Length: 488
Image (cartoon, rainbow, N blue to C red; front, side, top):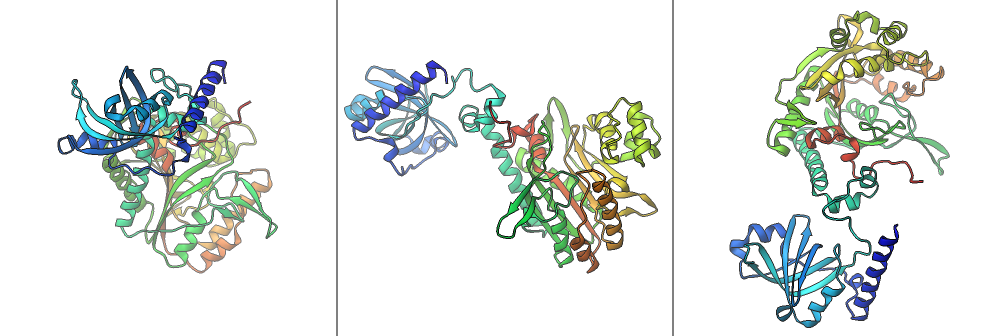
């Protein structure tokens, strides 16, 4: 804190003490009943003119002119002007304005009127200081511009930048519309464990914790997938979960260690059904939240109207690199191709990483209009069903919009013998040092042995979807409290 800020805090604390001496301790107030939000007063002016209302909010400005003062109160709905006049408010209450600072919470009761300039205003007849802001807010003209500080002090960011608050309102609306869409189609929302003995369902390094009573190491889930498919085995046919998942990976504009996923499973469906569900779901959400299926993301126009384009993964890479698709089927040939393309090609990189590096560098940036990239190599998709007639590929897709991946989906592997064999292959890779290889899960194989119907599964990154719909360049813009390095 600078010397100037320290002095401002000191002055605000002195004002707090004076309020307490006057018997008006703001922190002693437990509740305040208001009759209207700011927007309700403004929009309902024709009916409210001349009537008494009670409003409350944070003081955003105060302009004193002798025996009168104007201020702006902000609540969740917007801002309303208040007018304080000595002869209307009374000397005792009017004197409180001397102890008020920008950022304080005020409650005001009075008559709805308009000023000479036509601004809708509440003429105060009662004023209460409901809470004292002991730290000054950033200057309203310059705002809070430092990105690092905005993420660390999100509470200030929300006060100063209305568009940030709007982003998180949209986020809430997106999740609500996802639920409404799926509920309307007969899906059941379920909950599965966040702490798991085996971190399955995704290729990622997990966070580890310890349960003292059981003396057992547990993992924060990297995905809920295997538990949800156990529920399909158990007889549920259409289920979904809006879940928090955790991956012990780097932080970037696209990755946060804690993130929100939607996972959906439908019995008797395949990845074609899930593609149709995906494009219809996202079109529904966009239409309901934004009112249009066309949007602009980082300067690029996107149309989310179904149907979306479909292209095979190997074909997409071949289209952009000219490489023989067969070179992507084995690690050594994929490594050689990475070397030719000037991409990382270390001996420690597994096939998934090599193919992903090629795709991210040469293909993904060009997938601006909604596209399903389909049919991935079996070796990099241990939970997906093989493609009929081509056992080297699986029925898997990833949706891309504006050069960003939004999710992952399969026709789910329900053959317990094949699943066990693939887990064994992953276990060998894990033993060789691959920390992201899928661990063996004997109980999941046992569940499949009881029988799972043909099933389609889908995972969508809700954070990334909100980024798209709010034109946000970083995942940290759509997570209220993103993970940050500790300040030095």
